[in-house]
Image 1 (cartoon, rainbow, N blue to C red):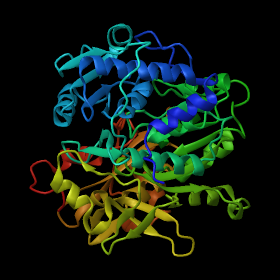
Image 2: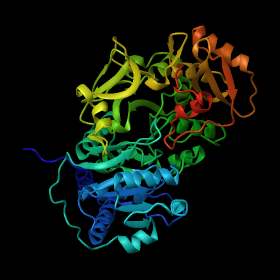
Image 3: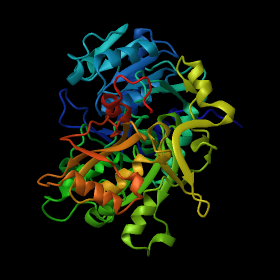
Image 4: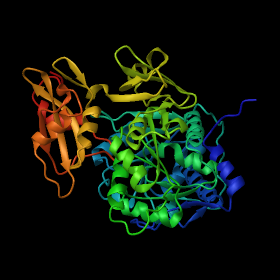
Length: 513
């Protein structure tokens, strides 16, 4: 017997087994009225009301519905409602500029555009055949409560469920087609590896637009887990809600956990969630110092994963095992900074030129309307990640050394910017750091560190360089250090180094020398 694995399975089980259980707690502080706290039974009713509304608009199966929103219960509902009816959800990064959002809406061919109230004015020029502002307008004008929506005519696990646009290393993002099967397998393995069960409480500290919140909304529903929506990342607010709701599990980039660590320094009383909270980190390799502080200062369990939007996203998983429990804290943190073992069902290898390649049921169907890019990414039966890495022959753990494009070649030597960043970040005066390659007449490229100092700290360029040389080979140390007030990041906490490099390579034909 073969039954299609679709997003519907997760909500069906939530309604069957947890109809009266707490389902979704919406963000209370938002420009539009929040959705009242929902049981999973009520979540199902609202999902069907969305679907009936799309039916009334004449939005057919396979049509795209774009949503530009901060984290909200309505966005979470649409992640179910749209693909469960055979349509395709396009969650859009709310930090994109209007012209970038317009490109995504046009390139995906979305016939419906749903916009967060806070973004309505700035996105007024972005149009679709049907355009709504999330909130009272959609609740009253679009949703059809009490109307049974038409069923998906031919449920298909290989149908595209969502198109998620990458933050990109190029000017134009690519639309990643994730199928129902991709999402189903990712949810299953994520829940297994993070030990999810009915008594968990999950908080959405990760943007839901980013790879569908890493697939967590689906597996949490399927296992009856209460989901708490956080609209915007704030360290003190995360701690407060961990205490208020009894949160046990969260996901996010290293920058998220740094804000919590900063807030914990002035938190009055015992840190909430000690020996209870599990944190899943990805988006960028975290400094080992951050990992060690998570355990020592918060008492939260730290888990490292690695993946991409193109892989739904889970590829590897790394948590401290029994054999590592007796190691010194610093060594445990160093081992946790690795990407980890392949997740269940994932095969990895490293190509001759050092690129990480993957095979799995979570790998994308393709890039929307970009057959050449799809063929390049999926050539020879493997997905080409664009990341450089190594696999430890002793224990099979993957370590990501850098984006292939971010490797710095200075004097013929390859240098991982991540390795240099980790060394610099170990200096107590450093709050943030990004390392890039800049042109050099003699060496081709040389290493520049962009550093944000911790509040109240003062340190000179020479001290940072010396600190690095004490920990790394001399050629890996930066030759220059530039102090900055901030380092810009994407909504998912990533640093787009190609943008940081641009001013230094302006006027040159290539961004490699």
